[in-house]
Structures are given as C-alpha cells and as structure tokens.
Amino acid sequence: MSHRVRAALIDEIPEDHGLEVVLEGKIIGLFRVEGKIVALDGICPHAGGPLAKGACFEGIVTCPWHGWQFDARTGQHCLTPQISQTPYEVEVLEQEIFVIFQDT
Ligand code: FES
Image (cartoon, rainbow, N blue to C red):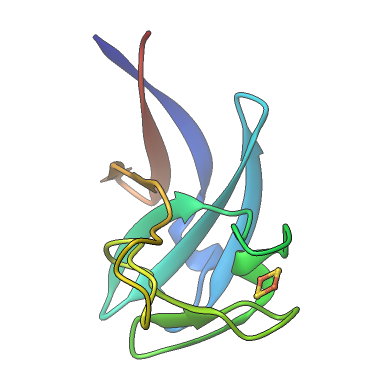
C-alpha cells in the first residue's frame, strides 16, 4: 500500500531548479527536469547538505555544501555507483505535485 501527500504547486519549481519540502517528517528535494517533476531524499549522504538548495543543470543536482553531484531523475551519485539517494515517485494532478510514500 501507498499514500500520496501534497507537496507543492508545479509553478513553484522552474525548470532546472529544486524546492525543498518537508513531508511525513522527511526532507524531500523536488526538481523539475525536462519539464518533469522528480523527487529525492533531500539530505545529502556526505554530510547532510540540502540538495534541493543546490544548483540543478540538465538533471544533475550539485550539493551546495561540498559539490557532490547526483542525477535528480534516479538519485544516482555521478561518480560513485555505490552511492545513491532514495528517489520518490511523484504524481502531478492538475497543477499540484504529490509525493508517493510506501506504507510500511
Ligand atoms: S554535504 Fe553534500 S557534498 Fe558534502
């Protein structure tokens, strides 16, 4: 089972930008890449930097603290295959973005 939580309006996220939201007690980074909204765990695994506040260019988000880079579409670290951020499924209904959480 899963449930969805409203996260933001689509217009709050310009192309190649991120938006940090707190949902269900988790910090989530939302990004718009090639017109599509994607979501990742928003806390950088290096030292806790805010990924959604970093630069995002052509789908690659750069952590603002020390520069680790991730593919916003998959969560994969750009240099180290063993490191990845948890991606979240997203739905966009009308102009609203919803993040899907799996029930445990
Ligand atoms: S906290 Fe993100 S690169 Fe260091």
